[in-house]
Image (cartoon, rainbow, N blue to C red):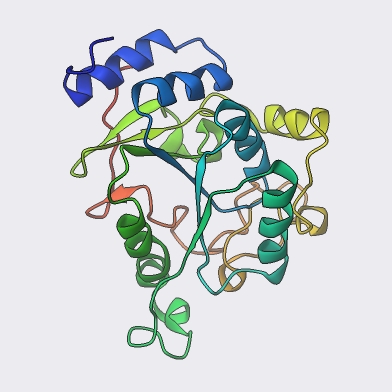
Length: 240
């Protein structure tokens, strides 16, 4: 594929070419066309599957981990364990400066969107400067807003791409991959947390509930905001 094609044309080409390909193929294709990519990982309940896949596609993959300073202690320990086991040598841990905006760590009690913006969105935007794009672990089954998620997207307004290698994976696919490759599980999964974010805004999920019911429980919110531009979820890719 000619490297001088406009960004939207390259993304359209990749979505057409890899429409029925596996996650490893999507990752290899992404790195071939956009060598300077970062993998943004929460090191949450299912993160280890994508981290393992990416480490196989590129041994020196750049990983960005957002430490919101409100994470479960188990997540912080798990992040170090996974990085060591997978041999991830380039893990950048980023944190927001909350001294002025949230000095007492109570912003989440008043405005969860503002808290997510401060501790996740703004600090990630700065960390991604200079990258061609980033790799995410988003999947279509996770929410209605992701039901038409393509493998490749143009992030409108930034000039970057987003790569979603697991877009077509079902929850069972993730679990099978983790089991087959004997990957370490997040310790909170066994305690009823199938989706894990910041400690104040994540609760256990009861049997029969949606797996993401414990995220921002009882609020009209199911995304932290890092996949939004100017307050809106933006997806510009080839029709699927």
